[in-house]
Amino acid sequence: MEKTKITSREIVTVGLMVAVIEVCKIAFMGLPNIELTSFWIILFALYFGKSIYFAIPVFIVIEGLIFGINLWWIMYLYTWPLLAIAVRMFKKVKSAFFWSVFSGVFGLLFGALNSLVYIFLGETLSAGLKSAFAWWIAGIPYDLIHGAGNFVIMLILYKPITNIIETYKKKQG
Amino acid sequence: MKKILGTSVVVILAVVMVFVYLHFGEKTADGSKNVTVEVTSQSGEVTSYDVETDALYLVEVMEEIEALTFTVDDGMIMTVNGETADYNVNGAYWALYVNGEYGNYGADRQPVTDGDVFGITYTVA
Image (cartoon, rainbow over all chains, first blue to last red; front, side, top):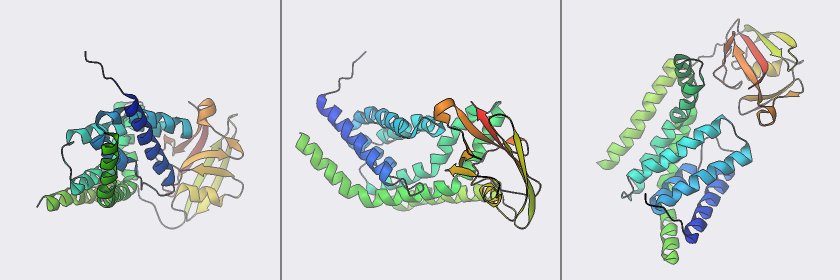
């Protein structure tokens, strides 16, 4: 089995990624479902490759330490890694519009993805499915805001931020 | 062409979700309703409040009950009548029951209909 070696430079990059995601997360906390976490995870997964798979667990652990371990934390455990994996599947695409649509769809499906946890919380599978479905439906207005927010944020910020990331990567050599 | 296709994906998905929400979503009821809120404390003591209300959501009913003090964080009931349930300390939370069944919503999104009995019960996981 091939071992994955992580260099000190990558560790610094992972630290930077987590710091950027966390600071923006806290800065946008007042706005319901308007967030930059999806935006950053998408761009970092595109530009820093597999380092994102180190950054996401660190981000999730920090979130748990700051806000406490709760149901949403379990949702984070699979939602953000799934996003990164999905992004890596389209890693060759460098189009602001494509990633805006991608991020928008992710925002729209965020509640549906998170509701999956409720399936396992029910006493029976049918009770769990019912609960997950009700939870998803109740959150649809928030998912719509989330999708629209993600779409617009990516459309506006994709080019300026990717320029900055490319400059950073050139300086890093 | 690709842009039209991409935009269509987002718009169609959003429209389907709006349809699902309008069709399957819990509906609130306008007008006067008689409901009961039953608080079960950590010691098992039950306090019952009968309310006549025009409120659409449970949290508004709770606000109307003068004898009831509470705090809610993001729909989660945190403190009731001075008793705090802190999941991080001992796995305790205020469970919400609607007509005897475990509620699917937070207090801020739980619709109120005539005759509803809401149970707010101190529970340790």
